[in-house]
Length: 385
Image (cartoon, rainbow, N blue to C red; front, side, top):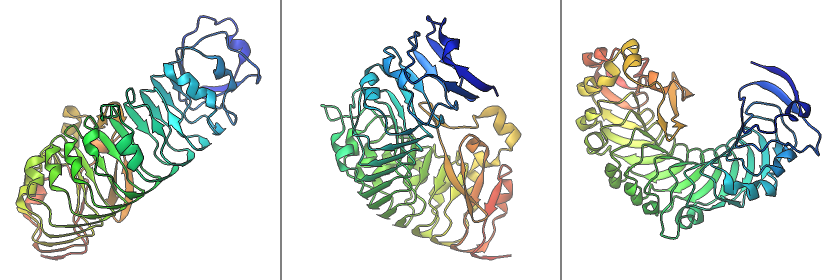
């Protein structure tokens, strides 16, 4: 909670300083535009400091930085070209939550790149794929299609090294290309909140290490591809707010037994809930609201044993946050008709939403065994007493 002004004079005698990490403070760095730091940093984390509005020009002569975090520092304008010339030494670059703008033509030689929540425009950048493991460009205004980036932005052997890919909340359009066979180490993918259309491609079944799949709030159609049953490590599936349809596949429960979050809200799925879905004993959030499901609520929902655990017991035995490669999981969950985003406490929340379908019959008594439920919504159906 430190406040105040840091000046260049405070660094003059610190010529051997290599690591400076002071994130989460309300400090302001005031230096002359021509200031040259005598310290050559290896790690510099000034997240939440006030540095802007201009991009810090004194960084231009830093030759050794491999970890740079300037997130939430009030900087704006285009990223200066010299920063990308420095990037051959970067392992980690975080410029998220600023007002940076313009296009990004190329990202080279950085292991983990976080540029989310800015004002970037234009098409997806080309990348140097043999070193990149995390690419987060979410919450910008990047437009165009995925084809060149997804099908050609890979190593010469045709394989991508990216493990975390977050392109959510942009203006991407067109179909999702059917070339996921080049992305076999991908563990987290978000294409949510774009303008993508067409079906979910069958090649997504090549992602055998995939833990998290976010495709919500697009214009996708068709059904859940049968090849997804190869993605047996999946923890999260969120395809809410599309035009997906068909019946729920019977393999979904047995094949994806590690699922904790299944969000199918606001689509065109129909038919009965197959009893095989009850194989999902690790499930913590189930949302099939605003579809066309019929039949009775399966009494085998009692097999969702993770929902039967009270919070105090769950806290002792589980993590409250789900991570992949240091990247926190998040999910948009509907509570009483309002959608909230959960991330750091996602593991604590436990919900079932079957609202606005055509379920009939009685509410199964077995639901009372789910002691960990925080939210249960059965409204907008044809249930009996």
